[in-house]
Image (tube, rainbow over all chains, first blue to last red):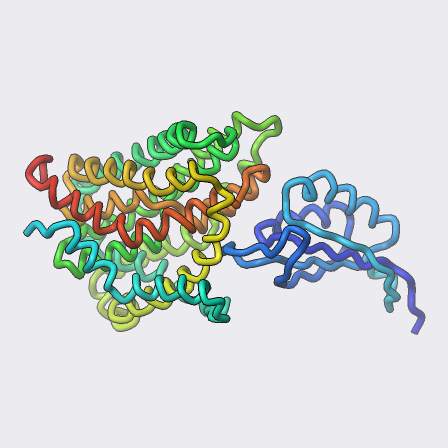
Length: 99
Length: 328
């Protein structure tokens, strides 16, 4: 099977933001995503005492052009005030037309 | 019967739920790995919300509209006045900006189910009657405080507040759905329906509350190191505002014709601050407000204070005012 190059965008943010983030990345044009509950620590330390439960990780495989769009919206609406980190990496995927 | 305040405080402190809370605090202090599994914690929080809703609903069925309307109106007024007062008092005691004061107002205007539940168990185990519709008042008092707090904070923001999203979170959140849903179930099925589920939702209730408070002790204990960063003003606010709001609640309850137990519980509702519904709403609507301030004050300072000292204090106040105000 032929593999195609795409980008994997991973966003880790506080769990209160789940609905909003999923809505926003959908609007940006992604076709699918995976959300998982995660915990960990960052430069500002561990987020503790939040009864809503730690962090969420949203992963989505996207075409290269979409990466900029997603990061632009994170930069405007999320990075300034929320605990939110994101990165993009290269992935080879099967059935490239799905992304 | 008028117990003195210290005897009441002692009886409260040596109850299993409060001691379990202390054990949770201790576990954090000695860096124990103790934690309730997340799913179990979620499950018992659903149990408590639904159980208290059904119990209140069953009692509501036997109440007359003429008994309820005045306490209901008084509660709505408290729901608007308490966050306004919190905003003002926070202004006197701290040098926080408008947004953070508004965030505090939203938390202190709303209520804490666990504080209410612990108080209900305490007052009832002291042999006092509590009107079943107090749970309705709990549901009523949950939302207005958040709205008023966000309104106050929005004056300090250049952008508009994400009203729709945060109110939807509050109204569709499990607190409201389970409380209101439980009240409906209880009201429909009445005492016959409650008798059928009593072994789970009645007999086991205090035991489950004890487990829940163990976890809350751990969560609150992990917040304690942040208290230093929050500043002296916030600590003083977290310790004094509940006494002010709680006393107002007891007096308002007395004037509205509640029993001693009912007035004490309305005091507890007024004094308690939210740490489940309000933080999510505030986080979404006011991203600039610091959780290090509002969550620390609500969960790290006011919740333990109310649990240990506040509950017997408001109960004692309600007893002392017997005869001074008009009681039914």
